[in-house]
Image (cartoon, rainbow, N blue to C red; front, top):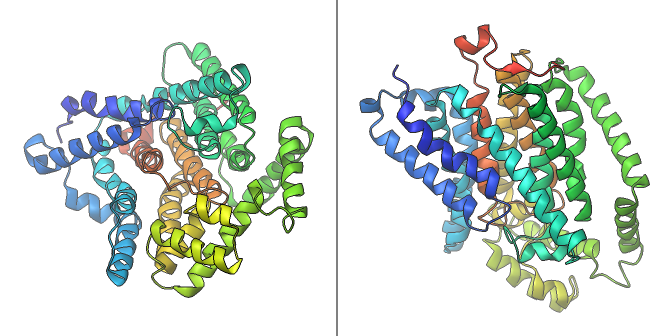
Length: 431
């Protein structure tokens, strides 16, 4: 079948710009996302003329993924119909998952050797994001709340989570080299990854480090070690223990840990602390779910309305009711606003792509498939743990960094006869 070489440049430009610039400029992620959607829809409309693969065959091959990424829209539609409401912002966020399917189909048409250059996008994103964080917080002394007014304009937690993920991805990419200058490329990945971890540290964000145990498992796998499920739990426990020791001994994280302990100890007297606010929101979201377990309460507007009512009864403080409209937890947000189907939709959006990556890694593939499969699994697992203390999908500027990157790694890690037989990229010296 004819390769759509003419599509490579227009597709790769927004694809690489997405991770490279998302932390630096507010509208970049949405612009890149919708450019990719338009390109995909245009290619679908004339796929026969261009000699592209059949969309029907794609749907048959990836039907579990299609169900997983379409279910959030179906859940939202059911809730909106039940309550007789409409929320364009919420619909856009759910479509951000569904519209990743045509993007995935489009990326499968590209030559893998060109698509692998996505690596330079997330390396640049980690470097730019780290540079901004270090400049704004320790150098200029503007404080961690500055991220709400600069760059992507999200809170420090979401910013640090994405920065951590891009930094860990840079380190996982040590499993392969794409340039002729192997040592220089490896040094750049180590430098960028380390810088991103340090920048995450200066943001004083605790939850971002939850992704490290998954990274500790995937790093050796990306370099050629077999993914043995019998070692997965012991490995995660060991990585978690080592992370705990690091958090306990590192001064900045230890201070933040002690702050959380203090928030718990003084919760009844001082409920409006960082952790205390989350506890109030989580409790409120759970009670909203209990009131509407099947289709939820509707949307963030309804969530805010319920908080106002809970403030009158003393379940939350007036400060929480006035300043928050979501529960700082993706799972409780899905449960409270869209009920059990909403939670199921979110879980499938995380676990179905993860299952594809795990299945590919268990076949002990070459670096051309192994590294992107590790990166994709890192993306899924990181968002899964980030969703516990933060509402990662609250903002339409953040969802493309999940949906587009996951399908890009799915396209890159797809086994093919040409790549299954031989290495098409150089493995790292550690593989």
